[in-house]
Structure formats: structure tokens, C-alpha cells
Length: 318
Image (cartoon, rainbow, N blue to C red; front, side, top):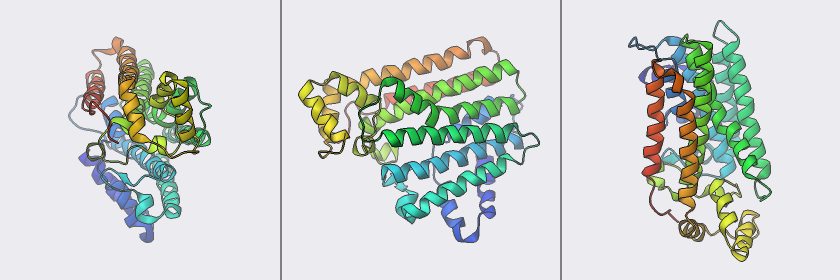
């Protein structure tokens, strides 16, 4: 990660002087960097060093991810990201849109520096899928015409795809067999789905100081996620109608009341079960590769997410 930090800060010189500070603002935020970790762990051969190619491709996926965060925060009207003001709040939404585009562009430019076109092809396809997932979700905001299948399709595209390609590129550049590359990619996909479901749960049950970003934005922006889907199923008709009116923007959203209902109807445990199911699927796809160097390291990420979920408050914050 230290090598990645150094490499990312060297990339700032490629940005025009007028926007270099804005790019630095995005790069210099402290996040979990799960996607670069997936690159490093998927490509780890145990020699004690990380190859420059792994560092470079980790930077590519991190820049793509940072670009999506900039755009997400604009659409969610979020105030905080990683415990400080979002780029949209710091520079204005119009400039932030273009800043996200600049980060995307530089990520793809870095991808072209590899001797094979495989990296650029994989990253560009994944970026398109991520954007498609965000577009689908944006078009569905303020609508209750969303099924569980729709929800899973959206998070598969907008979140799991970048997890998948991180594992794909890491294991490919690490020189592992085609079968391990395929299974590692599926591991990343399941982990990404699990992580997004957890993130949607944390939006209602997290603590802003611990999570480091604005919470409660899903209900406020009319975004249907798994906690809200299950809540709508379990509420009595009259209360379900009130919730639908909030999602449609026809009445002020009542976050505190919705969290209270989620606690009463055991929504937390239902969503947590969905996270655990994806983590079990992630672990299962690597079951034939227990002796492969990256496997035990990747499996630790499943445990890390279980610990994160266990750390969420027993009741949500209003």
C-alpha cells in the first residue's frame, strides 16, 4: 500500500496544474482500498515483494473507484466521504463531475501502458459496466418498481464488477493458472456483492463517525436497497403506503421511524444473512485452491467483512 500511495501521488504530475490540487484531494483520502488489496492478494506469490505491474494495475482500479465515488456523492448529495467534505461540496457539483471524468480518463491512460491490451480491455469493459449499473440505479430512483432481481443486477454491475476485475487482473499479472484466475474472479464478484449489501445495511445502521461518510442517503434520495425492499415486504399495508410515498418523494422521509421499524421487524438480521450467504459463496469458489498462495489471504477479507458487520450498532442511528 505504501508503494501504491507513492505511485498515485506521482500520477498527480500528469494532471494539469489548475486541477492538480483537486485530483490530490481525491487521491489523498484515507479509505480501506479493498480493490487494490484484491489486486495485491490475488497476485501474491509469496516472494516478499510486489511487482511494479501489480502496483500500476492497483492504481488503475483505485482511480476508477475514486472516480465513481466522486460521481456517487454528487447523485446522493452526500456531505461527507472518508470523514471530510465530498469533492462535490468542496469544489461544486459541476466541477466534481468533470473531476470524476478526469480520474476515469487517467486510469484508462495508465492501463494503456501495459504491453498487452488485455488490461486496458478489462478495465474499460468493467468501467462501462460500473457506469451502466449507476445509470440503471439512477433511473430507478424515486420508484418502487424494483424487484430483488433488479437490485442484485444493479449491485453486481456497480460494485461487484470492480471487485471481480481487481481479482482477475491481480491473478493474471501474478502468473497463475487460467482456472485460478477464473475462480479468483468469481471470488471477487461474490465479495463485491457482499460488500455492497453490507454498505446498504450500514446506511441505516451505521455510525457516521465510524463509517466516515454521510448516512441515510438511500432513503433520502429514493434509492431502493435490500433493507428497504425487505421492509416494504414486512410492513402492514398502511405503513407500507407511507414508506412508498417517502421513496416517491411525496412526503418527507422519516429515517428515524424507518430504522425503528427495521429493528422491530428484524430487517438487520435478514440483510446480514444475505451478506453471510455471499461470503460463503466467495469462500466456496476457492475451495479447490487451498494450497494456492493467494487463497488464505483472500479469505481473510471475508473475515474482515464479517467483523465490520458485527461492529455495526445493534440499533441504527437516526
